[in-house]
Image: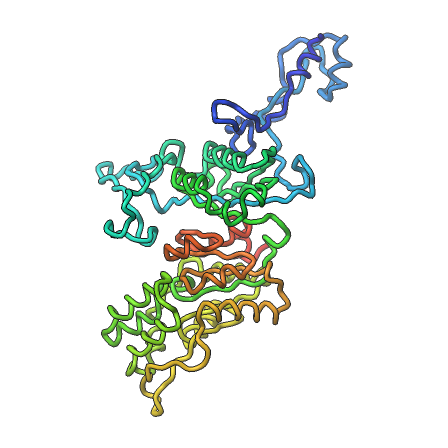
Length: 475
């Protein structure tokens, strides 16, 4: 065999293959994780000192490697550049096969272990105390040990992000691909591609498209989202995974419906009203239980409103200076309006503030509950009038708005945090529980716990550069 033929035989494109080292799957030569190469120009890529005689010149030309000169013979050698076939139509396998997309968020704001990452240590204060392991508030159904099952809870998996890096690392990606491989029954080869949505070197948001999805007769989409293997993966790598179908409806949504309290704004309005009358403790206790699904929402709302009897009628004007927008809410609405979306707020709160918020954010629809005012117009009567915007009403309103705008439900995105939002989240083509109550995180189609509502755009597939372009109004 000639030298050229031997080189051709050895030239194998990097690929995803099985390996006993990683338990059956290893990612090799992925473009996103290639180490940086020194840029020596095209001459540095092509230069070689190997002597090539004239008899082999034709062979080199036939391989597309150029014609070597007697003094400086050249040939193309591996430059370290690997083409990642990220477009769905370029992936191997049947083009009509269903595809799923998983968006992985690294929870950078919630370290769960006492290890400090090198990039977060402040050199000016090397003796700062190490953080202690803790469970963030609202991330578990109860913190009362007496309410836990008789058997002790399973031990937490060993966190791996402090070993491999505080981002979605290559090992994290490989582990996720292995889980997808294990969920195939009967087994099928999984074809996948990925995009780093925020940073190419140290991504904290990554989108993975894979095909085929697991057999729905073996495991449904809902079961897959709640699978124990994915739960363990999220805990080990300190990430959250959102899985959705990769079809034309995924990115091209046209209507987004929001809850108001603790979603678009950081407060629960009724608790703020109760603080004025000095009944905050009683009202907030009922609110918390209602949002966790422990109480009927309609009955609990009437009970809380009754406690507000005698509140000055101008309370809503006073609360406008207290209300704080959730970080990223204004930017998210601005970006969505740039794309031509219709926006709505469906609130279990009250009409005056819902309409005011809609004007602040440029929302197209605002629905909430209406409080009655005394005949002299000075105070609230502690009663409601009109239909109650409860869980069932929110789902109906979502359908009505979509029908009025001529938008299929597949093109509707819903975002909420309370138990009264679950029906709305299920009704929409995509439902996202944002910093939600524990029971909602367990039941919602998807969940995200992050500091900014703007991260919703990552779920729709927009990169950080695309988000900045939308906010700047540039093309």
